[in-house]
Amino acid sequence: MTIIKGKTTWVDVQKPNKKDIEYLRKTYKFHPIILDELLQPSARARVERYDNYLFMVYHLPVYDHAQKTSRRAEIDVLITRDTLITVHYENLEPIESLSRAIHNNPHFKERVLSEDSARVLYYLIQEIINFSLRQLRHVQDKVEAIGKNLFKGQESELLERTSYVKRDILEYRIIARPQETLLESLESASRTFWGEKTRVYFNDLAGDYLKVIHALENYREAVEAFESTNAQLLNAKMNHIMSRFTVLAFLTFPLMLLVGLFDIDAIGRPIIGKSIYDFWLIFGGVITVISGMTYYFKRRGWL
View (tube, rainbow, N blue to C red):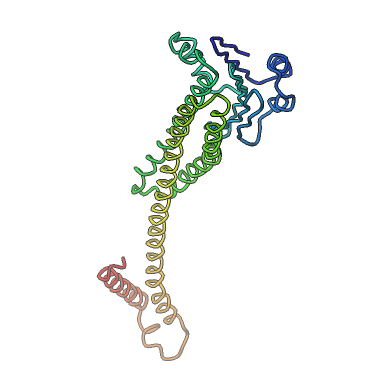
């Protein structure tokens, strides 16, 4: 547990245990049901208003390099008018960045902790939004790489890479989209909890979060367009290969028929058995037919 004090206090709890929960119960008189909920992650992001505090569950996407997709991380926030309490279940970059900035910069610490908990919450969510934008950079890099390799004959490889990027964008979207509604709810709750003076802060957060949503939608549309183009290129390549096999089949069929006819044991055959050059006559005829058909197909553009 980390406690940073000014006119406002920030209490940060990582991997909460029963001792931490008991400290919060005795110090701040939160409802036991809310405190019990802090012991494990919640399934739903939300903002709830109580008599003298707010409870917020915020989900943020974190990229998992092993799974090659984004997963959900959670920050629970309990807010009184002069204290902000964050609870999380793993090391999270936004928490560490804000804590480091407060410790290393006295002027920033004064700005963050000088008024009320609304100011601390504002800077915390701003840091989370900045982190979310940074998390999208790996998606941007992958989408741009797909675009650069689109016409380099790597259709099969790009199909797999595109599928991974699409899954990552989808998982990110599932996590990120509800936070847009959450910030709107927070803006509404802030006016009744802190007063109208805080409205501008949380309106600003909602506007900044739109940058995340818009960037995500742009990448989704781009990767879908690249996927469609790649599929068309792959289909064109497959059609070209199939047309070649069709032409080859058409070339070999009459030759097989010709050889088969000469192999029929029938009376009155004019060539077979009449000369020692029968084999070479048949071979020459086959070569002539192949050459003639090949020349004709090339003139027609089929080969």
